[in-house]
Image (cartoon, rainbow, N blue to C red; front, top):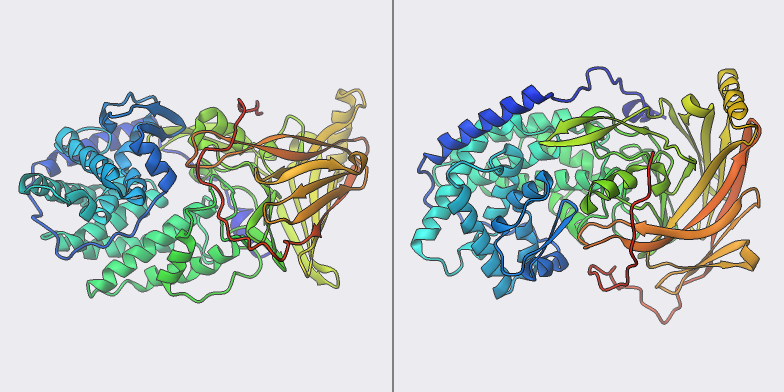
Length: 607
């Protein structure tokens, strides 16, 4: 309950978004600083040979080599084309190109074709935009780009003559000078951590840039104190973003240490706070819980970051960044047990309060649909709605609603509004296992309803027992409920309890429609049953996964019912009926390509 104050009851006063005038002024100052930096003639080489630290997705790298450019939800096919000759369908697409993170994906492929494209596109950027013009001259993107250029310098300079190598180093120095002047205007959170880490990287790696290191290191320490709370969480409550921040901090600490400079105490303390939180947000298969715009994380990135940090921390007790974790045997359950982010931090937040994910061994079983941002604005909006999560929702409503849009990082994004004002958790250890009782009042203002969810995971992890309740808890709630009932002609309040299944789960109705049997690729069989209060169906769903060309088809278990009185309860169980066969070693990683069949899908309408 102590962490409820951290994540569920922050004041929304003063959580405004920069206006248009502020955004125009920032762009103007960025432009002037870029033009000034481009006139400099700094940096002639590296102080020491940089070591690659970022490797991306092999599948995405293959897509790029083949001329399939998937960024910000838009797929442009341009075999043989330069990145910079592509049509720009959206500012987010253009920003993704100028950020340079695609270099990680080409490095993951690493063959001659990938190297040729990496070199051509980077040196073409220098020719076209190195003079200080173009949308890439923002601190948010410059820090990200600097890190990649330095990380993959060996790939980029392999076989190059002196003239392009000199142009490469000169551009690195110019971008470093720009970043030193403009990092303060980077968006708070991950973009500013990227900007400062990029400045530290460049200052340590490039000749003549050492003077920027001390100030950047001190600024990074201040950001750690301001953005990373006492429990190791960040305002966006995005687990994958927390991993990216953690990775940047470990890289910066390693670079400083290798250069004989001690990272600040605040910097190291932030690493120490984040590590146990990330461990608590990791499922049994090693992937992160997919909430508030975050995905599973790149394969191996979390283990690599934890190993590099050298922090031997057990998972956090109680809530971790507002998430509750149950584990028993080979099973993990992670639940969003706090109010969603607010203000600018909610630009990618989801209406996912009390949603859960379940993983058995190396196999995800129950999931949330995930962030649809990679598939365009319609999928982005749909992925944020409550029906895209494994929780209970009133038909036509989400537990949090989208409010006004704000300009963040150059893009207009909807911020969450009308979020639950109260989210609470009680826990106890019983003879049957760990029991958690959650509640939120996200539907009180509209329907007089509070959602209460009770979960118990057995000690061996073979049975998850749940009960979901919609009820009017106070006299005011009952009066509001009666008004809603009168308006509906006493037809009640329709609700759906959803359990989205991972695409690799083979599900079928069983026992005459009274149960759903689910077979995992490991050979395990799980069975879902309910108490008969609601009508159960097995319906289509989607799995929104970054790095793919399109959403993946999936299934979902839906329990549909109506609240006709002041409360309605639904009981259900998820039990393992068959273990992984002894002859099977379940070591296969999840597929990362688009070879699976995919029907035509469209994002559902959202409130």
